[in-house]
Length: 453
Image (cartoon, rainbow, N blue to C red; front, side):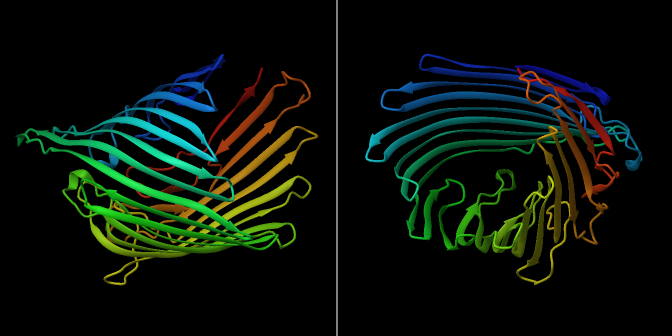
């Protein structure tokens, strides 16, 4: 497969793929480049990627698979004079990602299977920033490397199963900062250079009794960075009626702190969720979920993060109608109430966190197989609940609407072309957490023809 496209602001996407089998071997190779000067300042990008995968069928229905992927990303490459800052300002980011894996799977009989996964990753990020008027320059570098192996036994079927495993990983992380100014000269590097080993054992499974299904799980981690942590979960589903399912879920877990902050305490999270899914209402599928999350020692984003205890609760509602004359509607709404556990004050969105109280998604679908025509109109809305002390300005002006149309006029023929058209941000809405730096791309269009053979 070979494909290519080009558009305004030198927006181009080129890709190629090669795949096939040879006896017991299978292979897949893909490479591509995406680049654009961007529709707004600071949105230029140049991304290269290449990946490959090989598989081999072993005796007894076993398989072994190996793969590798490399991604090179350079964005904000053409950012120029931003008048809002009162002077020329530049920002450029270079990312490199490489990861590989080796997977082995072999049935051992009696519904038992042995699975082994080995992996490695390499991450290299550079952020270059400068103020030309003040002759200031910064280079922030972040490098991380990991390698590890995961071994597990998988027993059972769709009704009853159990997975027991162990995992080992080695992590190395290095963070560096360098600045240059006319008045101060070269600033000293601030470097965090750490490496650690981590071990884990875990078990999870599923057990069904009639209309009731239990989903227990437990995991113990020796993190090597933030002490030992045990996580657990328990899920239940009950088929109350053929068209009504009840669900509930409780879990306790953690996340590791950012390496370069010097923080050694993990973020602890406890969650409870409960909800239902039903199609009892004529012409309608409906799903509702209530959630409560208790976050302790929560670390915000940024180089100098804040640490708070938070409670976040709310509900989600999803609905989908059955098609009527080819039309159907899909919608989703999320309400979030987030507060500081110590002060009991409501949390606001700012540069360190986003806690939008209201999120809405709408979609109108049309499908006419006789005409070979399909269309979708989507809308997305977020109310940020802006922090009154936030130095920048947020924007949540209306919904962002996109229109997607597809028509295959000669659908019965193998080489029938398919015409497509997409209009993005039809009414020039703007949803952003910082209008001084970012804004939604104004209305733009794309279209063309596809031929599959």
